[in-house]
Image (cartoon, rainbow, N blue to C red; front, side, top):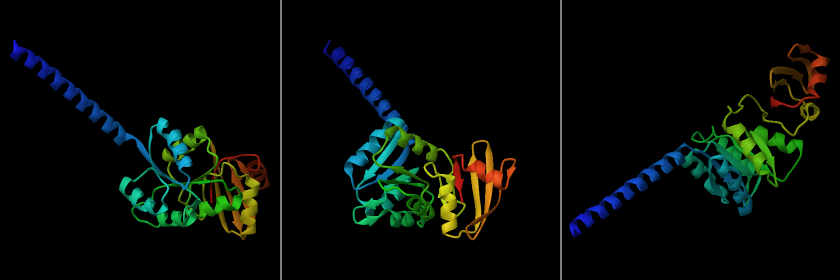
Length: 231
């Protein structure tokens, strides 16, 4: 009898250990499959808000309030996205972005700026350095998750001096900036089912094509639309 009781208890323990090991393996595999986001901000509450917004959406969030750790963390974990504040403790977000984009190990990782600042020139400066998007503080959790999903599941833009998603910028504002900086080049626009191009010479728009429209008609149409902008 004692031996039979021992055998029963042993079988129960073994079965429990096997079940726990299987659960741990499933959790480890699920964690491995989760996409990673690296967030850096000097405000720990902001970092917590980012985690609260993205972890329920299936992301693994690595958070740090130390800018000096970002390069090493990104190199080790290879996140799908880096979210960085512009104003950081003892550091500048633009310079951190430049260090990221110039690093051969992590230069391919897209960077989203998190900022309380507003203004078209601020956004264009970030896009020029290589940021793919901006999101404003205070954070809207649903908007942050939506924007992160859009970036992670789409190919980053790498075509020119300015690149990114200009959701909060009007077409007229873009024209004014390009005119003020006397840019020469091609403005490429993706709008749902249509694509277009506006040609610039020293800040002055020349010909334009959007879908089947050309010239002034195409420019007037663009001023009433929003979309993905690449310059």
